[in-house]
Image 1 (cartoon, rainbow, N blue to C red):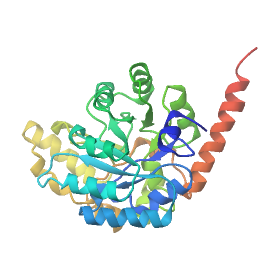
Image 2 (cartoon, helix red, strand yellow; image 1 turned 45 degrees about the vertical axis):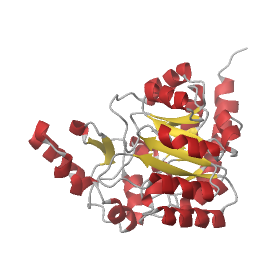
Image 3 (cartoon, helix red, strand yellow; image 1 turned 180 degrees about the horizontal axis):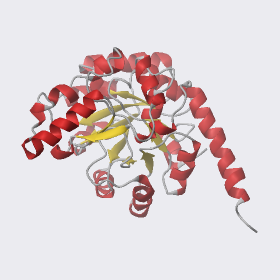
Length: 325
């Protein structure tokens, strides 16, 4: 399948693996890229720019296909050395960067001078238009269904994607609720040039996370996520567990008095314990509503091959048969 995204990124299939904390390691990124999609290493999972350089090198040992690095720009108590991370990306020969969080404009010139394509993650049309204005090559449009941070507008993809198509000139991919061929065909019909999948790629054989994490996703339904940190306007969609229930009760109790410092133990620094150690109650962790569509743990190649073959059947058989002469 050829779309503006496959042409822009030099990939075979219009499927991108989103950046995910303590999931986007070289093993998964290489597996996705080898299967014809675009794998993504999560930059800030690596504790230093040197560690990121080593992870990029590891990925290059596993694939000769294009892969990207996610760089999330967020205010924090200890701001990462972003220029050093960017140097690691450039010197490592990475061809695509997925940016997320706050406006990445100040960091774009160095990436653009190195010929790197930039995809910015956005949860609204207005932010997508801003990304286009500052020179991003594409955007990942995240609907309200997505795991992680869906923004504060609560617009699902059935509305958000056509709105993005109405306004944008640069290509965009659909993110949030993407899991299978139906997701891809629907996204293409609404104007996207491909899909970005996060939660679906956690439940693959190559994802270097604890088996309990994968089993939790397979066992979950579309009703098993919760929205936390809404009072702080930093909403995150997470899988429902005891930690999520406890956090929501704390939010109800404290109301407008809630401060981030009072919930930091539930939301910060928990990902290594959950993703690597399988301590499923260590805190809250990002998961999309799409868990309700995930019932198996295939290899990345099996997943992507099935999506593409089933998409072809949907387009050329089911949909074409509905067209009357």
